[in-house]
Figure 1 (tube, rainbow, N blue to C red):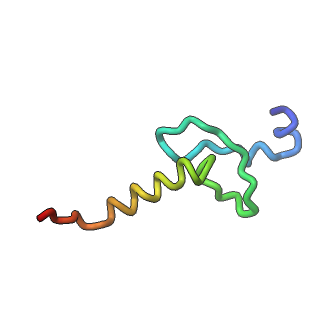
Figure 2: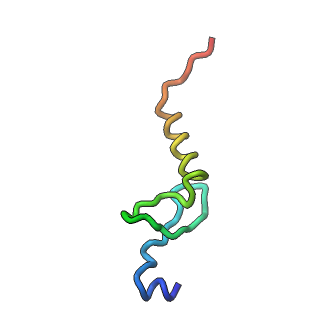
Length: 61
């Protein structure tokens, strides 16, 4: 951690945007906009939940 503070890379340490996740990660993206520690885990779940929330309820017959 001391090395990261010294060379300025500590600003790339992020907390996962998933509220139920406690992971921290190093953002390797060029734009420094990575949101999840793993897209396959947290990112996909978040996006699927948002998609389902936007869809109208299906009627059952």
